[in-house]
Image 1 (tube, rainbow, N blue to C red):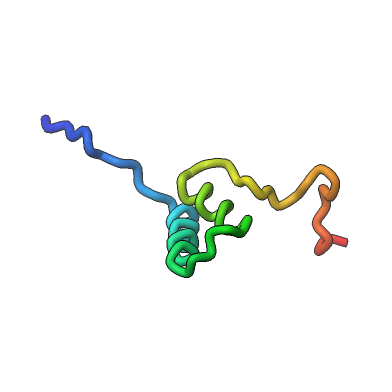
Image 2 (cartoon, rainbow, N blue to C red):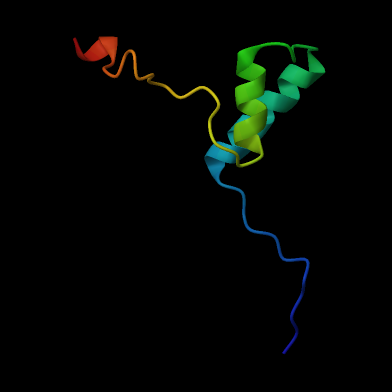
Length: 64
């Protein structure tokens, strides 16, 4: 039995997409926006720093 210590978990499609967005923004020099901060965090598997709903506005305006 051969066990490799270099096995890495497979990246989800969502995380892969955020990584693409972050790299594209880096290539364009657009790293000062909140969207870049969000893309970078999600690409690294961290929590979303920009949740889609805030306590002040818990309901989507599209549901109104």
